[in-house]
Image (cartoon, rainbow, N blue to C red):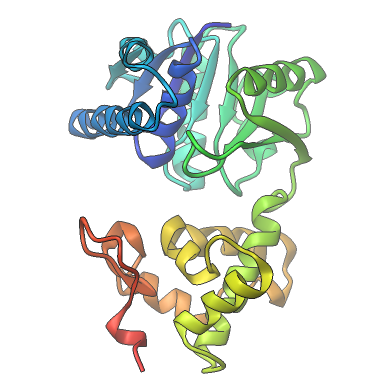
Length: 296
């Protein structure tokens, strides 16, 4: 299994392409936008340069890694010879179902179809394909080149053989695969998102400020990043989407998104990606500055 196709060239997609290529796999990175693909390759090169500067890899490894990545704007052509497809498109169920319907027709019969979804049902995705036994979740963590975990999600029909293969591939990437079953939010986000939501709700109710909430969790619970900063990093729109999946899937009030989160997303304040969330982000600056809206 050497030919990998990655669908989506955003933060997760280019990170996934990076780690596969760095570990000897041939990668087709696919996106409908040619400029997005150009930005993705520039990001991968920048991240490889960072690894070279830290003496984690050599210039030769960097060059070999880049040489293994090809770009493609045609989905069907991009997966024609794939042994494994990893879909990392927008966290939108309709978009993902459309992609997997196409993959079902275009990818070789032996090809495993994986989704990097952080919350959408693998069983639902598999149901639109002609190979539900070969559909599985590979939920990488951000930033992909750094984070060790791959949450491997078995759908209702995912075979033992496919699960074993994905575990082996994940290990070849230097990752630690952990198996979970297909229920809303899986494990990572079922635990993480209610914590983030509660932090937002605490801010909404005036219990404490942005910095105080984050510092309590960093200093008191040894979290490397506070929940509000982490929400900005993930993207507040993504957080909202996952919470909606949890709330719809379980029907429990504890998963209902905070009204503050809903309003921030409506206003376009999505965190790092928009330059404004709970903190304000200035390009090139490493200083963490609370957004004007939340300053005392």
